[in-house]
Length: 486
Ligand code: ADP
Image (tube, rainbow, N blue to C red; front, side, top):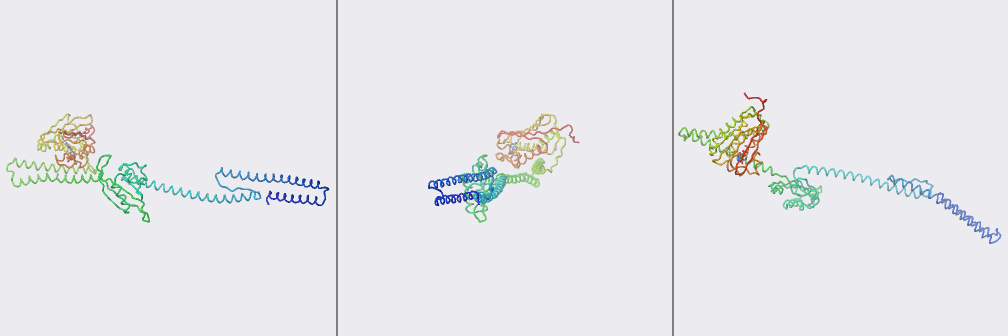
């Protein structure tokens, strides 16, 4: 039994004994008078009160020490941030209370532990979900095509920078916004909604749009797919937009090229066969006429040759199979050869070719056939894109100690400023000049390859529409150590 309770029991027994003793002593006249009986009663009462006080102090001390013990343990738990069991003597007055509290704490701790495990699991799940989200975003962000993902409420939940650029919206502030507030393209927005409504999993559509930034026409191929969960419920729509402008342009250029090449092949072939027929039918009676027909055949055959050479040389250089046959070449000689080869073509258009050599016989270490072709292409263009009666010039001068400069100038159609950067691209032809002459758009591309890729030189152009053009080739001069051709 607990001490306090024992003391209280002793107190009750003593009080009962004391009270009974006082009563019997008084009743049985063991004390002399009533006064004496009262005195005895008060004495017993005083003694018992004193005893009670002593007992109360003892009980209070006992309780206070137990409470202090409990408080100390609770403070320790608090500072250690843990839930522990309160340890107390099992005979202690508060032992039962402490046991109940401990029981309660045990349950809290178990619950706490469970919550912690749950929290850990949730943290892991959140981390996995975050990693997956990052991976998904990384994949979508690495795609060069524009990607938009909407949910079942047609709100934007994912997009990449290409989409941001194409539709000109700000990604961070557009998430969870209705798609029609993000992209201002009614037709595409309606298509997204329709794909979701109809649960279509494969929709492809072409869109022709104007790029507001570059004011350029865009051809967009749009793929849409409604994403469904395992219960066939709509999760959202994925939109992938592929900019096929370049592909379309290349396809158009290739078509143009095929048309140009066939035209370019047919024209000289037609002249050759016409001349051959005339010779066969003896239509050229005198020697001079026959010579004229022969020279037309030769010249047209050369034209065909040039075209085929252009095509073959470009593909050889581009495939890396081309081996330049370089030697020391006198550039003046080459210029003279090209001019004399082109005289007939110039004469046909009543164009005069002027030649200006402002340096002493420059020697370059080069493949003579290639350089011949490059000069020929430039001079041929100068003649082609000049008007009848005009003149073109070829100027040769020393640029500096290491380079010689060759310029081919004309006063012809010129090139509009907006097209000048593209004229060296394969198959590119300036539309405005197409009526003046046929061509394939390969000549300048080949010249650039020959000069810059094969000979470490440089080609530049200055031109003004309607005023004429000047193409200049800068070629490295021969160094002393370079082998001299035999
Ligand atoms: P093409 O076979 O069409 O002449 P090129 O590659 O030689 O192909 O030239 C590309 C385009 O550059 C030509 O179609 C023409 O419009 C333009 N061009 C080239 N040279 C000149 C020039 N001297 N004057 C005006 N335009 C030129």
